[in-house]
Amino acid sequence: MTATVVLTQPASRAGSLAAVLASHGIATVSWPMTEIDEAPGLDAGGLARTLAGCRWALFASPAAIEVTRGALARAGQGWPAGTGVGLIGPGSRDALEGWDARLDGLAHAQRIEPLAPPYDADALLARPELATLDGVGVAVLRRADGREAWLHALHERGATLHALSVYAARDAVPPPGASCWPAAAAAAGAPVAFSIASADAGARLAAFVRTLDCAAWALSRPVLTQHPRIAQALRAQGWTRVMRHRPGAAGLVAAIESAHDA
Image (cartoon, rainbow, N blue to C red):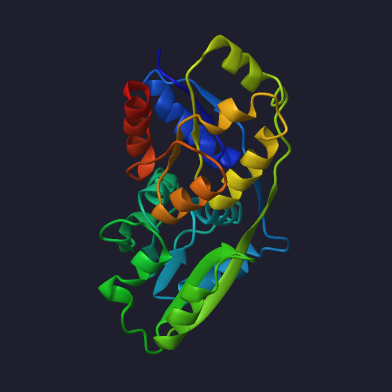
């Protein structure tokens, strides 16, 4: 029996992951730890004008991609010519799929992403295209409380920097039955794994499951994540079976199959 995978990603991201997993016969439960909202007062027209004045638009996360896509599409704006796209890694690439056909101009935009794992902002900044940026316009599309270190790095390299807060994140309310189904799964001996993409999500979920009678069982389930820093944080939070996997939906599928076979 293949494990049921609990997807803790925001609903916009979990939906596409669930579809891929379903195509491989893998059942999922959606338990988002975070809800994503468009940043208050986001001006899609102003966003489009800023992007048009930049050589690079760097997306800090798949959530930034989803929100920006929605804002530009609602405003009837295409992707500006000459503005390249910087992605954190395969997860962001997955989130970008389907844009080419729906957003005019995007198919012709140059794209860069990390050449090798770990896939994060530091690896994107290691791209040679971003090494020297004297006077080059660079937009970073992010959440307001996102990491500042890579903004400082871009500024030090001479970029004309635009730090654009396009989305906000808030803690999600546990879904109906969240207090009941883990105990039922534990009692039935059902194989369950958790897909956790951020340390914050892992901490919130760990705090919740510790309130349940089946806490020890839940914390001993396979936890699937991509980044070594996140894996380290999850272990510190009390998750005892943390497994790293290759980025993207295909990597998650392989990890689920490995977790089940182990």
